[in-house]
Length: 363
Image (cartoon, rainbow, N blue to C red):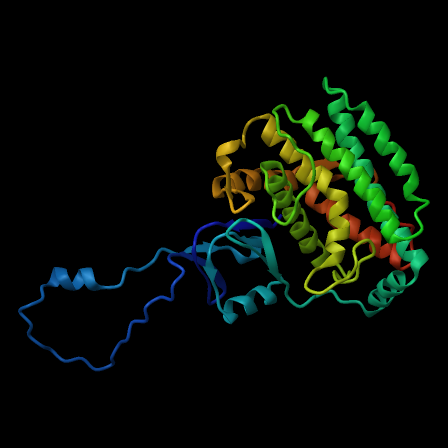
Protein backbone atom coordinates (compact mmCIF):
# COMPACT_ATOMS: atom_id res chain seq x y z
CA UNK A 1 0.00 0.00 0.00
CA UNK A 2 1.30 3.44 -0.90
CA UNK A 3 1.88 5.89 1.91
CA UNK A 4 1.92 9.59 2.68
CA UNK A 5 5.24 11.41 3.07
CA UNK A 6 5.39 14.29 5.56
CA UNK A 7 8.28 16.76 5.20
CA UNK A 8 8.99 19.23 8.01
CA UNK A 9 12.55 20.26 7.13
CA UNK A 10 13.50 23.07 4.76
CA UNK A 11 15.27 22.21 1.56
CA UNK A 12 14.64 21.10 -1.98
CA UNK A 13 12.56 18.43 -3.65
CA UNK A 14 14.18 17.45 -6.90
CA UNK A 15 13.87 14.94 -9.65
CA UNK A 16 17.02 13.28 -10.90
CA UNK A 17 16.35 10.84 -13.72
CA UNK A 18 13.46 8.70 -12.46
CA UNK A 19 13.94 9.22 -8.74
CA UNK A 20 12.73 11.88 -6.34
CA UNK A 21 15.12 13.26 -3.75
CA UNK A 22 14.76 15.45 -0.72
CA UNK A 23 17.81 17.62 -0.19
CA UNK A 24 17.85 19.39 3.21
CA UNK A 25 19.17 22.92 3.37
CA UNK A 26 18.35 26.56 3.58
CA UNK A 27 15.54 27.99 1.55
CA UNK A 28 17.86 30.36 -0.37
CA UNK A 29 18.95 29.59 -3.87
CA UNK A 30 22.04 27.33 -4.04
CA UNK A 31 25.25 28.82 -5.28
CA UNK A 32 26.03 27.76 -8.80
CA UNK A 33 29.58 26.52 -9.35
CA UNK A 34 31.10 27.73 -12.59
CA UNK A 35 33.57 25.36 -14.21
CA UNK A 36 35.91 25.88 -17.10
CA UNK A 37 36.80 23.28 -19.69
CA UNK A 38 40.34 24.59 -19.94
CA UNK A 39 42.79 24.63 -17.02
CA UNK A 40 46.16 26.22 -16.46
CA UNK A 41 48.68 25.74 -13.68
CA UNK A 42 49.51 28.70 -11.41
CA UNK A 43 51.74 29.01 -8.38
CA UNK A 44 50.19 30.80 -5.42
CA UNK A 45 52.03 30.67 -2.07
CA UNK A 46 49.21 32.41 -0.25
CA UNK A 47 46.88 29.42 -0.30
CA UNK A 48 47.41 25.88 1.00
CA UNK A 49 45.74 22.62 0.02
CA UNK A 50 43.69 22.55 3.25
CA UNK A 51 42.42 26.06 2.52
CA UNK A 52 41.35 24.87 -0.88
CA UNK A 53 39.48 21.83 0.54
CA UNK A 54 37.65 24.02 3.02
CA UNK A 55 36.55 26.30 0.23
CA UNK A 56 35.01 23.52 -1.83
CA UNK A 57 31.22 23.45 -1.78
CA UNK A 58 29.87 20.77 0.53
CA UNK A 59 27.89 18.00 -1.14
CA UNK A 60 24.50 18.03 0.52
CA UNK A 61 23.02 14.73 1.62
CA UNK A 62 20.09 13.61 -0.48
CA UNK A 63 17.38 11.31 0.71
CA UNK A 64 15.72 9.31 -2.05
CA UNK A 65 11.95 8.98 -1.95
CA UNK A 66 10.71 5.84 -3.70
CA UNK A 67 8.26 7.36 -6.16
CA UNK A 68 6.20 4.20 -6.62
CA UNK A 69 5.61 4.17 -2.85
CA UNK A 70 4.13 7.69 -2.64
CA UNK A 71 0.42 8.30 -2.20
CA UNK A 72 0.63 12.02 -1.35
CA UNK A 73 3.31 14.44 -0.16
CA UNK A 74 2.61 16.83 2.73
CA UNK A 75 4.95 19.82 2.93
CA UNK A 76 5.21 21.58 6.31
CA UNK A 77 8.71 22.99 5.86
CA UNK A 78 9.96 25.68 3.51
CA UNK A 79 10.63 23.78 0.32
CA UNK A 80 11.68 24.57 -3.20
CA UNK A 81 10.98 22.60 -6.36
CA UNK A 82 10.90 23.29 -10.07
CA UNK A 83 8.64 22.47 -13.02
CA UNK A 84 10.67 19.34 -13.76
CA UNK A 85 9.78 18.02 -10.32
CA UNK A 86 6.10 19.00 -10.64
CA UNK A 87 5.85 17.48 -14.10
CA UNK A 88 7.15 14.22 -12.71
CA UNK A 89 4.57 14.31 -9.90
CA UNK A 90 1.87 14.87 -12.51
CA UNK A 91 3.18 11.96 -14.56
CA UNK A 92 3.07 9.71 -11.49
CA UNK A 93 -0.34 11.10 -10.38
CA UNK A 94 0.95 12.28 -7.00
CA UNK A 95 -0.80 15.11 -5.14
CA UNK A 96 1.34 17.53 -3.12
CA UNK A 97 -0.30 19.38 -0.20
CA UNK A 98 1.16 22.61 1.19
CA UNK A 99 0.88 23.94 4.76
CA UNK A 100 2.09 27.32 5.97
CA UNK A 101 4.34 28.21 8.90
CA UNK A 102 1.48 27.81 11.38
CA UNK A 103 0.53 24.38 10.04
CA UNK A 104 -2.58 25.63 8.25
CA UNK A 105 -3.45 24.06 4.92
CA UNK A 106 -2.94 26.49 2.04
CA UNK A 107 -3.15 24.64 -1.27
CA UNK A 108 -2.49 21.51 -3.26
CA UNK A 109 -0.71 20.67 -6.47
CA UNK A 110 -3.47 18.68 -8.15
CA UNK A 111 -2.22 16.96 -11.33
CA UNK A 112 -4.40 16.63 -14.39
CA UNK A 113 -7.12 14.11 -13.61
CA UNK A 114 -6.33 10.70 -15.09
CA UNK A 115 -9.82 9.19 -14.74
CA UNK A 116 -12.09 11.74 -16.37
CA UNK A 117 -15.61 10.76 -17.40
CA UNK A 118 -17.77 13.10 -19.43
CA UNK A 119 -20.88 11.08 -18.64
CA UNK A 120 -20.30 11.27 -14.90
CA UNK A 121 -19.47 14.97 -15.08
CA UNK A 122 -22.78 15.67 -16.80
CA UNK A 123 -24.67 13.69 -14.15
CA UNK A 124 -22.77 15.41 -11.36
CA UNK A 125 -23.75 18.82 -12.74
CA UNK A 126 -27.37 17.72 -13.26
CA UNK A 127 -27.61 16.59 -9.64
CA UNK A 128 -26.20 19.91 -8.47
CA UNK A 129 -28.58 22.00 -10.61
CA UNK A 130 -31.70 20.04 -9.61
CA UNK A 131 -32.69 21.40 -6.13
CA UNK A 132 -34.45 18.18 -5.14
CA UNK A 133 -31.56 15.93 -6.16
CA UNK A 134 -29.02 18.25 -4.59
CA UNK A 135 -30.70 18.45 -1.19
CA UNK A 136 -31.13 14.67 -1.23
CA UNK A 137 -27.36 14.12 -1.51
CA UNK A 138 -26.53 16.98 0.88
CA UNK A 139 -28.84 15.44 3.51
CA UNK A 140 -26.91 12.18 3.26
CA UNK A 141 -23.64 13.92 4.05
CA UNK A 142 -25.11 15.57 7.15
CA UNK A 143 -26.85 12.36 8.17
CA UNK A 144 -23.56 10.45 7.98
CA UNK A 145 -21.72 13.14 9.93
CA UNK A 146 -24.44 13.34 12.61
CA UNK A 147 -24.68 9.57 13.08
CA UNK A 148 -20.89 9.33 13.42
CA UNK A 149 -20.91 12.19 15.92
CA UNK A 150 -23.57 10.34 17.90
CA UNK A 151 -21.44 7.20 17.76
CA UNK A 152 -18.54 9.07 19.36
CA UNK A 153 -20.81 10.34 22.13
CA UNK A 154 -22.25 6.86 22.74
CA UNK A 155 -18.71 5.48 22.96
CA UNK A 156 -17.83 7.80 25.82
CA UNK A 157 -21.30 7.63 27.37
CA UNK A 158 -20.64 4.06 28.48
CA UNK A 159 -17.28 5.06 29.93
CA UNK A 160 -18.43 6.94 33.00
CA UNK A 161 -19.34 10.04 30.98
CA UNK A 162 -22.99 11.06 31.15
CA UNK A 163 -23.58 12.37 27.65
CA UNK A 164 -27.22 11.30 27.41
CA UNK A 165 -28.46 14.91 27.14
CA UNK A 166 -26.28 15.58 24.11
CA UNK A 167 -27.14 12.24 22.50
CA UNK A 168 -30.87 12.92 22.86
CA UNK A 169 -30.50 16.46 21.55
CA UNK A 170 -28.59 15.31 18.50
CA UNK A 171 -31.10 12.53 17.84
CA UNK A 172 -33.82 15.19 17.73
CA UNK A 173 -31.78 17.19 15.24
CA UNK A 174 -31.22 14.08 13.09
CA UNK A 175 -35.00 13.65 12.65
CA UNK A 176 -35.12 17.13 11.08
CA UNK A 177 -32.52 16.38 8.41
CA UNK A 178 -34.84 14.61 5.98
CA UNK A 179 -37.42 17.42 6.24
CA UNK A 180 -35.00 20.24 5.38
CA UNK A 181 -36.19 22.17 2.34
CA UNK A 182 -32.91 23.62 1.15
CA UNK A 183 -29.18 23.58 1.84
CA UNK A 184 -29.31 26.71 3.97
CA UNK A 185 -31.81 25.10 6.36
CA UNK A 186 -29.76 21.92 6.35
CA UNK A 187 -26.62 23.82 7.28
CA UNK A 188 -28.52 25.33 10.20
CA UNK A 189 -29.34 21.85 11.49
CA UNK A 190 -25.73 20.82 11.03
CA UNK A 191 -24.64 23.90 13.00
CA UNK A 192 -26.92 22.97 15.92
CA UNK A 193 -25.60 19.41 15.94
CA UNK A 194 -21.98 20.49 16.02
CA UNK A 195 -22.66 23.18 18.62
CA UNK A 196 -24.05 20.58 21.03
CA UNK A 197 -21.32 18.14 20.10
CA UNK A 198 -18.57 20.63 20.89
CA UNK A 199 -20.09 21.52 24.27
CA UNK A 200 -19.96 17.79 25.09
CA UNK A 201 -16.19 17.84 24.51
CA UNK A 202 -15.81 19.51 27.89
CA UNK A 203 -17.04 16.23 29.41
CA UNK A 204 -15.29 13.85 27.03
CA UNK A 205 -11.84 15.35 27.56
CA UNK A 206 -10.42 14.63 31.00
CA UNK A 207 -8.87 18.03 31.53
CA UNK A 208 -10.31 21.49 31.79
CA UNK A 209 -10.43 22.87 28.25
CA UNK A 210 -13.09 25.63 28.50
CA UNK A 211 -14.17 24.91 24.96
CA UNK A 212 -17.10 27.24 24.22
CA UNK A 213 -17.34 27.52 20.46
CA UNK A 214 -15.62 26.68 17.23
CA UNK A 215 -13.25 29.34 15.94
CA UNK A 216 -11.55 28.90 12.60
CA UNK A 217 -10.01 32.14 11.33
CA UNK A 218 -7.78 31.93 13.23
CA UNK A 219 -8.20 29.43 16.08
CA UNK A 220 -7.53 31.16 19.38
CA UNK A 221 -7.18 28.23 21.78
CA UNK A 222 -5.59 24.75 21.74
CA UNK A 223 -8.78 22.75 21.07
CA UNK A 224 -9.72 24.91 18.11
CA UNK A 225 -6.15 24.65 16.83
CA UNK A 226 -6.37 20.84 17.03
CA UNK A 227 -9.71 20.79 15.21
CA UNK A 228 -8.42 23.06 12.44
CA UNK A 229 -5.31 20.97 11.94
CA UNK A 230 -7.19 17.66 12.07
CA UNK A 231 -9.91 18.83 9.70
CA UNK A 232 -7.34 20.03 7.17
CA UNK A 233 -5.76 16.56 7.19
CA UNK A 234 -9.15 14.91 6.63
CA UNK A 235 -9.88 17.37 3.82
CA UNK A 236 -6.60 16.68 2.02
CA UNK A 237 -6.95 12.92 2.48
CA UNK A 238 -10.44 13.00 0.97
CA UNK A 239 -9.11 15.11 -1.90
CA UNK A 240 -6.38 12.54 -2.56
CA UNK A 241 -8.99 9.76 -2.67
CA UNK A 242 -11.38 11.71 -4.93
CA UNK A 243 -8.46 12.17 -7.32
CA UNK A 244 -8.30 8.40 -7.76
CA UNK A 245 -11.90 8.28 -8.94
CA UNK A 246 -13.88 9.85 -11.80
CA UNK A 247 -15.59 12.39 -9.54
CA UNK A 248 -14.98 16.08 -10.19
CA UNK A 249 -13.84 17.65 -6.89
CA UNK A 250 -15.17 21.10 -7.82
CA UNK A 251 -18.87 20.18 -8.02
CA UNK A 252 -20.34 19.73 -4.57
CA UNK A 253 -23.81 19.47 -3.06
CA UNK A 254 -23.63 20.59 0.57
CA UNK A 255 -21.00 23.32 0.31
CA UNK A 256 -21.35 25.85 -2.45
CA UNK A 257 -18.92 25.33 -5.31
CA UNK A 258 -16.60 28.30 -5.25
CA UNK A 259 -13.30 29.65 -6.39
CA UNK A 260 -10.01 28.14 -5.26
CA UNK A 261 -11.39 25.21 -3.29
CA UNK A 262 -12.32 21.60 -3.92
CA UNK A 263 -15.76 21.79 -2.36
CA UNK A 264 -16.72 18.13 -2.89
CA UNK A 265 -13.82 17.27 -0.62
CA UNK A 266 -15.43 19.46 2.06
CA UNK A 267 -18.72 17.55 1.61
CA UNK A 268 -17.26 14.08 2.01
CA UNK A 269 -14.89 15.17 4.80
CA UNK A 270 -17.91 15.96 7.01
CA UNK A 271 -18.64 12.24 7.28
CA UNK A 272 -15.11 11.26 8.28
CA UNK A 273 -14.13 14.04 10.68
CA UNK A 274 -15.68 12.29 13.73
CA UNK A 275 -13.90 9.02 12.91
CA UNK A 276 -10.49 10.37 11.93
CA UNK A 277 -9.84 13.78 13.46
CA UNK A 278 -12.12 13.97 16.52
CA UNK A 279 -11.18 10.58 17.94
CA UNK A 280 -7.49 11.41 17.63
CA UNK A 281 -8.01 14.70 19.49
CA UNK A 282 -9.84 12.94 22.34
CA UNK A 283 -7.12 10.31 22.61
CA UNK A 284 -4.17 12.75 22.44
CA UNK A 285 -5.59 15.02 25.13
CA UNK A 286 -6.87 12.30 27.45
CA UNK A 287 -3.55 10.44 27.31
CA UNK A 288 -1.69 13.75 27.72
CA UNK A 289 0.31 13.05 24.56
CA UNK A 290 -0.35 16.66 23.61
CA UNK A 291 -0.34 19.37 26.26
CA UNK A 292 0.30 23.09 26.71
CA UNK A 293 3.92 22.91 25.55
CA UNK A 294 2.81 21.76 22.10
CA UNK A 295 1.00 25.02 21.34
CA UNK A 296 2.20 28.49 20.56
CA UNK A 297 0.19 31.70 20.63
CA UNK A 298 0.82 35.03 18.98
CA UNK A 299 -1.38 37.89 17.78
CA UNK A 300 -4.57 36.28 19.07
CA UNK A 301 -3.95 33.03 17.21
CA UNK A 302 -3.06 29.61 18.57
CA UNK A 303 -1.32 26.90 16.59
CA UNK A 304 0.42 23.58 17.08
CA UNK A 305 4.20 23.63 17.30
CA UNK A 306 6.20 21.45 14.95
CA UNK A 307 6.53 18.79 17.65
CA UNK A 308 2.76 18.91 18.23
CA UNK A 309 2.05 18.54 14.52
CA UNK A 310 4.40 15.56 14.30
CA UNK A 311 2.61 13.84 17.19
CA UNK A 312 -0.78 14.45 15.55
CA UNK A 313 0.43 13.29 12.13
CA UNK A 314 1.85 10.08 13.58
CA UNK A 315 -1.57 9.24 15.06
CA UNK A 316 -3.37 10.32 11.90
CA UNK A 317 -1.17 8.21 9.64
CA UNK A 318 -1.60 5.19 11.90
CA UNK A 319 -5.37 5.76 11.88
CA UNK A 320 -5.50 5.81 8.06
CA UNK A 321 -3.67 2.46 7.96
CA UNK A 322 -5.97 0.88 10.55
CA UNK A 323 -8.03 -1.91 9.00
CA UNK A 324 -11.48 -3.19 9.83
CA UNK A 325 -13.52 -6.12 8.61
CA UNK A 326 -16.01 -4.69 6.12
CA UNK A 327 -19.49 -6.11 6.53
CA UNK A 328 -20.54 -6.09 2.89
CA UNK A 329 -17.17 -6.69 1.21
CA UNK A 330 -16.28 -9.49 3.66
CA UNK A 331 -12.65 -8.43 3.77
CA UNK A 332 -10.37 -6.08 5.67
CA UNK A 333 -10.17 -2.51 4.43
CA UNK A 334 -8.22 0.45 5.77
CA UNK A 335 -9.80 3.64 7.04
CA UNK A 336 -8.29 5.40 4.04
CA UNK A 337 -9.97 2.92 1.68
CA UNK A 338 -13.31 3.60 3.36
CA UNK A 339 -13.09 7.12 1.91
CA UNK A 340 -12.52 5.75 -1.60
CA UNK A 341 -15.47 3.41 -1.18
CA UNK A 342 -17.59 6.44 -0.24
CA UNK A 343 -16.61 8.07 -3.53
CA UNK A 344 -17.62 4.95 -5.44
CA UNK A 345 -21.03 4.95 -3.72
CA UNK A 346 -21.57 8.59 -4.73
CA UNK A 347 -20.68 7.72 -8.34
CA UNK A 348 -23.22 4.90 -8.40
CA UNK A 349 -25.87 7.28 -7.04
CA UNK A 350 -25.11 9.96 -9.64
CA UNK A 351 -25.31 7.39 -12.43
CA UNK A 352 -28.64 6.13 -11.11
CA UNK A 353 -27.32 2.66 -10.28
CA UNK A 354 -27.82 2.61 -6.51
CA UNK A 355 -29.21 5.00 -3.90
CA UNK A 356 -26.40 6.55 -1.89
CA UNK A 357 -26.22 5.71 1.80
CA UNK A 358 -23.52 7.47 3.81
CA UNK A 359 -20.85 5.64 5.76
CA UNK A 360 -21.84 5.22 9.41
CA UNK A 361 -19.50 3.75 12.00
CA UNK A 362 -20.76 0.29 12.97
CA UNK A 363 -18.14 -0.68 15.52
